[in-house]
Length: 358
Image (cartoon, rainbow, N blue to C red):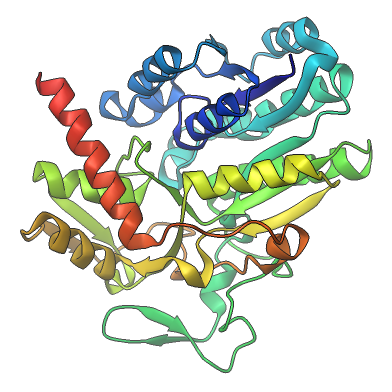
């Protein structure tokens, strides 16, 4: 039986990938040591997700290991060798703010961890495609230099700009920009993934995501804004909007749609590809718009406040142009917009909280 190795397997994208590929009949090796608990606290732990995966999928085997541990990764990949059909790397330190607290940890997880996985793939299963969940933060704050127009509820790109119709494409430079330390560590990982494709000929792809979201997200204040926003609305926790008058725009892609994109790449892999991936013009919202949608769903106003200080390296407006991936894989498409995503998060969160209460 072919094996798929998925790092960060109890996280949002990792768990979605486990579910998706297990249902396709693959044996899954999930690598996850619940670093999210360390990053963001007990409420952000993915332990609940790991337990659910183990109970639902007999073909899932959990490995409690750290991707920074080169010896552990060597043993894992050597054990399965060329039986590994695909590597999906979703494990990461994902927060701007947290990276500044512990720069060495951030870089070692995001950059060194990715290097370990690439090298083990090259040594033990070089025919296996390597899929990396990168980020739009590799572009730093360059998107903030775009000509933006303020409307009642959002910032929007000037209609005359080439990116206005479809969003920002992969031609945007990653140089001469403020990234945040998180963005810098992800740039390093992103370039390594490309280089292992170009230099060694591995089949690699960097998926530079916008806001990756869905009901499986353990949202925290420092990461996972849509899931955390709904969590605050449901629990009555005060929510803070940071900067840009709350009109900053994000495209949002459901975890299923992203993992489905991984599936299409796996079917016809390419080398050293880079894709902006997200909700695009199909699925996006501002903070104010997301708050309004959540209030309509819950039927009551949220308790939220505004801080004039934006997060370092944060984007005012991000809508990614997803046409490159759609050109390469025309059978793939977005299936869920923001309204449906918020509704799914709300339903899942209610069930999860009810389970804790019981």
